[in-house]
Length: 460
Image (cartoon, rainbow, N blue to C red):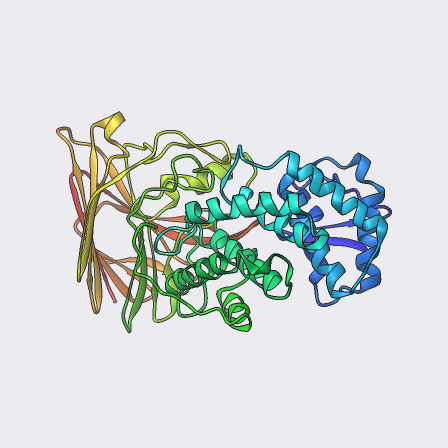
């Protein structure tokens, strides 16, 4: 049966597969043509070949699936499948080589970021599979330049999405596996890939919560990338060690003790030339208490250009402060950002972090300062609006589904945990938490209104 499920949406093709099927959006169509399902536990050699032949038979009519990004992912998946089953097939080989020709002519230099890295990872697979010098030279050129550009000093992938970091680390490990098990080219790229894998694994292990979850910061969703545990197991099988570096230029910081884990964002939204997966979330944070999510990022449910996408990227969907309804960073479209907040005067001490950002300066003449103060049994947030004028501001806290928020006397109680605010102007509202694509869950949020200064204490 031709039944496919991607992004929590299923479809059955009663007759031939329509590789251009677009009713669920372009990302679903892309997933259909990636061929990741060749590696499912229940996939057989016969079924995998049937799907590949069907794609080849219809290739003259395929549109989105012959764009460079799906070609890149499909190429790696076909090569893995053919290698596992030791299949040599001239028709498949010819079709695969032709697709790599299209990729070589359409490398995604206009998008850069993870797209160009995926192009280069796949070209490396194609180079080894066909022992093609042209593919190899281009893959090597891009990998050497882009891995140094895109992997930051603390090990983070520079688009600052933990989900995309997991995906990029998985690709690096795949390339290490490829080179370790082939003698062609004398393993000349191995040292670079191993070094990047070690620091990427270190960053991921630092940013991952004790329960194995990642923070859903920027464009991140669950059940898209390999988990942190799966990546550690894969790295261990390749004898890759972990190199944990202090969090620095990724802008993320992690504070943890026996009671809580907290990840705060005190960095810029991402590289200036590729902010497509960034959100308007300066000074956002997530908080886990005793290993369970408590205050969370609202997540990601869609890449479609619609109101939901705009909302999920907006300042209002993050645990930070909004002034006069303006955006810190002007997100628009599905993957665009106009003016961006810049973080300045970052001061880090043993028990506190303080910084300013200028996201409201151009329109309002406002600088927002947030200070985090960390104690064993409490966390304090101090927000200050620096301006000659008096403006209305709102701080938001988004709670994980199941956390019950209620007013009690002059403060808020959330599952028995008191939250003390210097402002008594607050509202308890509902929002939709999006842990996965096309999946939302009702949850509660707290909006606290203030003008010049707000102090909030979470008593754990």
